Length: 125
Length: 150
Ligand SMILES: [Zn+2]
Image (cartoon, rainbow over all chains, first blue to last red; front, top):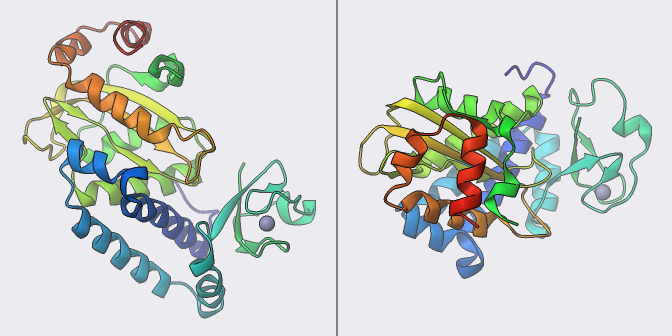
């Protein structure tokens, strides 16, 4: 399980993205997983939400100033700050990403964004 | 979509080698056949979920689950550790049966929560731990789902 080719900043963004997904779900009442987490897994929801938010804040602080600035600009307005690129298509806006961005070697060594929607992108192998 | 349709024999392992909580999460993740970078991210996300409270629901069963960007569709795996291992379960008993559930952050079909509920329900059936202990092949597991979780 080596992460040698994954840019550390991209790795942080992916973790933040996953935590935001868990937090959103624990916060969305009957539509989310909150009732199930309480019923089957005995989760203290308030504590869990607080814990996740703290972790997200910690990880955001670990972002480089430039990436953090962009993160802070886009995060309040969208559910997903990092979106997958699958078969050359950005799943944030469903627009094709130029092959130079989507397909070249070392695609996970730098943090890239979609020129169309501005999301950070994670190119799926 | 039935539970049976969400598993393949490749995503079922009846003799897990793991001895610790971290090892078992990694071994379950391997059953999904992701690339190593995705495996690393998924491990961290599952660990964070476990830190909120163990997904060991008692009676030897654990259901580690999360949403993660590293999967494109709902993915499930089942692993069995006949000797059991410490997973800090709700009843403090060793866990023998592990159901892994991973969903993308947003899914069109919205199957994640219903499937999580179905697995939890299936696992709570009083005779299920004994039945799982008696399985001899991944195909037996798939057949069991067909019969018991239609
Ligand atoms: Zn885009």
